Image 1 (cartoon, rainbow, N blue to C red):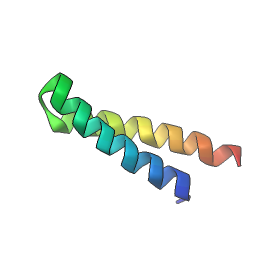
Image 2: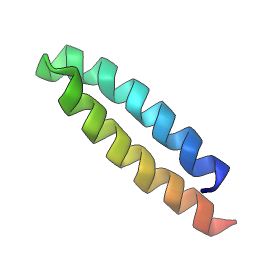
Image 3: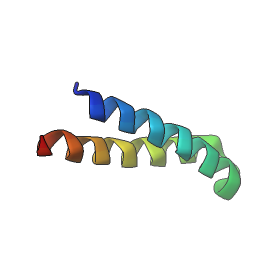
Length: 49
């Protein structure tokens, strides 16, 4: 795996947990959403290079 994908996944998961606790009152939903968005963004960054 490339480095931008890992970084975006980790940042997305961390932000998702925080957002999940604040909005959904469940860290697992936020983790899943954040990880998915981070993976999409990281994959997009990785293919541009």
